[in-house]
Image 1 (spheres, one colour):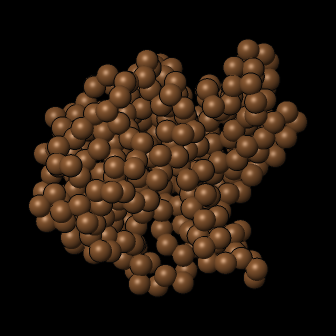
Image 2 (cartoon, helix red, strand yellow):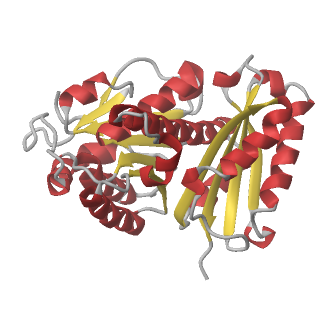
Length: 339
């Protein structure tokens, strides 16, 4: 596989043309897994609202991915064998094909870079992807979704902390999903290390897919809501995300659980934050009053968590993945307000 971006398969029928909408770029192994989880969650219909790109230095891992556009990083320096956990090598691998990355991202209005921090490819290459996007004639709003290590991964955590700080210099917003924050949720004395890692990965991938649903819903609607979401992320700095499911009278519980997500720990305190909230519904809810009621309830609940002077956006979007299920998904994103 060469370093050139390659397209495979048919594009979806929703907002997909270059020059409009959302692009998600999965960088490295975990970034690719996040992209795959988004594509599976959205399905063929929903995934058409987003342009998906995967970039990796491991050719076998890249080949297994679901993204229609794939970029092999470091075809000469890494030769498809990965970066061995070395961020400097990951950066060199991405710089080797920076023109291909730039071309793959051309025309997007909102870029979400998904990557794991603390290893080689994602840590080193994600900033290069952000730089390539920022060099466009009309740069997109750039958001990074960064998964960070467990507490016990001391060496990786130091690398991760530096990497997140670097991303904040090249991205409008960095949403960190800390595995350290979910340790108490996924670890028990009877669990094996493999089971613990699987549970933590599931938590990360579920939140990544939930955020993608909200972005796809906004891109598909093609209205002022998408512009508001872009403005929400522009220059936002650190961000936090919470995702939870509910149905019927359990929707209030879903919103509260989204606000209480471990990934929301450390979010800006009340009065120092602005929030964007998405109510994801299937057709069965959007066609009756329950979708409207969900938005009203979510607005009332989330309002308690923020000072309205700093803004709250709450909108209802359709998710094809929820059609016929009776489920409603709550997605809440919080960012700080400086000054």
